[in-house]
Structures are given as C-alpha cells and as structure tokens.
Length: 218
Image (tube, rainbow, N blue to C red; front, side, top):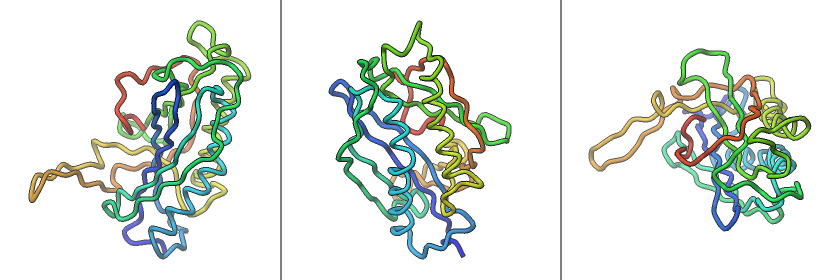
C-alpha cells in the first residue's frame, strides 16, 4: 500500500553558471505500487535514483561552464514534511564549448496525453553549449542529447518506468495550489495539480528563462 496521503515531491537541481545559480524543478508523486512506509525514505531513494539516472544525461548536454552543486527535495504533500539536500561532488557539464548566458536554456515540452494548458508543461535546462547552437537553434546530435534527458525521465519515472515507486509529472499551480490567509499567509498544495508525463519533445529553439518563475510551466 502506498503512503497516505500519497507523497507529492519537488526536486530542485541547483547549479552554477557564470557566477550565477541556476534552478530547475522536477515534480514527482508516490506511485500506486510504492511500498515505502515513510516520506523520508521514499524521498531519499527517489533523489538517489534521480542523481543516478537524470543528472548524467544533463551533464552530457551541458557546457563545461555549468556545474551541478546540490539536489534538494521537499514534500509538498504532506506540507513540508521532509526536506533533504544532497551535495554533488562532480557535476560539471561535459561539452567543451563555452556556455550561452545563464538565462538561455534547452527546452523540453512535456506531454501528458491530456488537453488543456494546465496538463502540459515545459522544462528549461540552462547550460547550452554556445558552439553547438546555430542562430539560436539546436540541431543534429546536440538536439538528440537534449531529447535523451526527456527520454530518461519517462523511461525511469514514467507510467511503465524502470523505477516503480514514483512518477514524474507536470504540476499546475492553478489546479494544485491554494493561498490560505489565516492564521498566517501560506500556500497549500494538493495532488489535483499533478499529471504524469507520458512523453517529451526536445525543442530546437534556444529558450529564455528571463521571466520564468521557478516551477512555472512544469
């Protein structure tokens, strides 16, 4: 039996590029097959698998000027029940080219098989290698490396993913966040805003994160 309520988790990959911090958020939910009996154990193991399966794909895509520093995980449901931080010892990107500015990013479109803006998303990945982009577009093998990140997310954490305990998905703030004013202003989260990602599409255009807020559109 899965945990009750099912855990809703936000994992943030925090990196550094040109002296600036970069943050990329990923959302996961406890699967119906999960056998964990504590949120701490489930989140800890989920983060380990994320570091083993997703981070290496990101490093293959990223410029050598980008480096992962930490991975953090928090429970949104139950509300801030658990917070875990893991330091990354060697998270530097592998592409020898210089990086585009930190506000430039590779873009993955996230699909769930359901319609509506609240059930699709975008994932922005900074550290784009300057020499492998042309006219603000990614092509050929380099676009394939971006696509590999999305494939790793769905093959590991999708509906039939290799890791059976948690599922990766889109989280809609519109459907899953409520602002509560009393007894003090705060946000509450619920799983109604979560939808499992079934596929991803690597976009060739270099995207901008200048006006993106963390976790918006993911």
